[in-house]
Length: 444
Image (tube, rainbow, N blue to C red; front, side, top):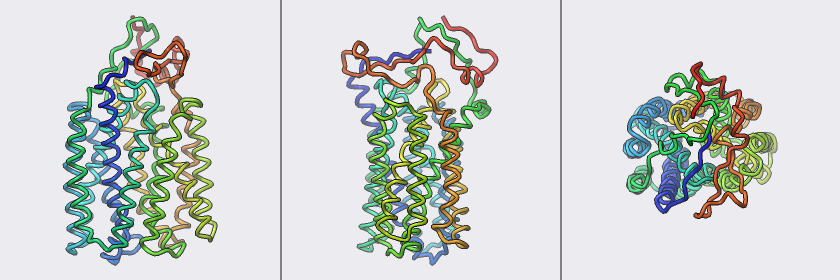
């Protein structure tokens, strides 16, 4: 099928801007927690393994949010999904801050992180579904830029966390002030979201076979869904392991103090942001698959430098390469999952759920290994998953109407946006046919 996006109107631009805002605020919320992990560990007197179990609470909540997100977004839309997510994020953040500062203990923080994680998972699917639709409306690759905005949010959150650590700001005050601002701003931004189903109708002249729609559960049986999930799983672990363990790895493995460890996380997040900003034109020029393969290689090299080189400046260079390599995997996986707008919510939910296994199993696994071989040695497990993501990268290839945009002199509309050209639109992709149900039919 072929989709031709309409001219970029002020309404569409406002929608795109609103998606940028939500991505940024989501990243800010998450990094606010991550930046204070050293203080949380000190407050609890927790071991590395116990911290892994604590972070597991957020992963459990995130899996719950992702599980329900496909249904919520399909029934109520991405706007309502973000609204519910904002409430859960606020509740979890406030309760977690109070639990840390007032000494309510491990169990109370764990419960708070479940609520926080649920909001995070629901927000993740909602903003990615809306972002994929906004990308189609804009007629060019912008999903990595949305995720760059997320990285900017995490960068700001980590920087504020490092500052709060240095100034010994109580965790409760830090969390409460941040969450009031971010939740209010998020609720205002989503009022500009548009209907993400606007691209479901097919162009009448398109005669390529169109797969019959599948249910939200049937997408799990599609090989392409599972392979894209492997990509997102590996790159999510590359990103998530840094978020969860990099400050502690720099403290325990390279001898830095709490503030410096949090500052190195800021370096990683800055590299992620740069990679995502620079990645959009690279994806438009070369396609998802080559960029994914190179990204995986860069991430492996950077992680190796951090683990094996006992020199802080060189380890930080490795952190930069790690961040650059991990930056594009998740957004490209989300774009690939949302290629067909009719099943976008279901596939994004499924792929994100697979990816969040990294956040579910990663923290306790790395924490357990860290107890025996140290955190730096435990991060070796991430290598396997990054390599698997690189090997599965072919599943993210642009297909049909989602073929990457090409800038042609005669194909720019009056609004200055390039039209989305489907490469070889008259050729039916064999993988898509295999993934569809047996009832495929010719349109038109």
